[in-house]
Amino acid sequence: MKCPFCHNQNDRVLDTRVQKDGSIRRRRECLSCKSRFTTVETLILNYPMIIKKDGRREPFLREKVLKGLQAACQKRPISHDQLESVVDRIAGWVLNRGENELPARVVGKKLMAELKILDDVAYVRFASVYRHFKDVQEFVDSLEDRELLDFVEKENPQLSLQPLPPTTAN
Image 1 (cartoon, rainbow, N blue to C red):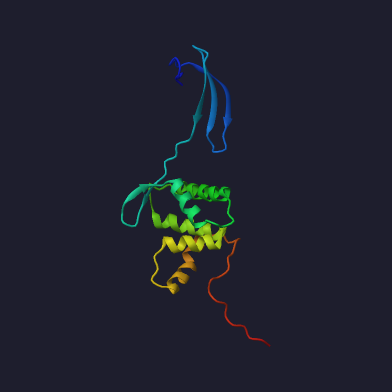
Image 2 (cartoon, helix red, strand yellow):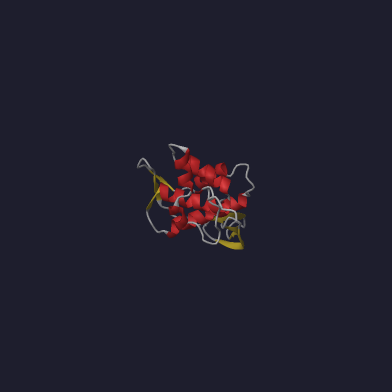
């Protein structure tokens, strides 16, 4: 590490701390001029490119995912930490797929599955903006999308949006 004061390349690390965001903070002392300075180290992850509906490619951005989640969860009893946790799961899922490119619709379905687990209202909001519907029935059918079941955990079932069949009284 180059000293910001005298530009000498020799220093020693006095203290190392891991930050909440996963970065590493190091307090250093230059061996030449004895000045102290702090550096921060972060891991650089290579996320895949996201292929948009119109064919454009753009990098996967955690901030964009968080912004979309915040919009869907506005005025809902969901903490920022819960949203950050969802973003972490999505980002980890995207990285673990090991692909260089990923269709936006796949990421969108994963996001909808995560929202379905987190909050039904946020899920409906996100789905209504994410997809384009011709009528209300198409919207209801979409919310009951069986493909989402591939992403949703089985331990956390949700109520159906379809009306219950009438029961016969004895």
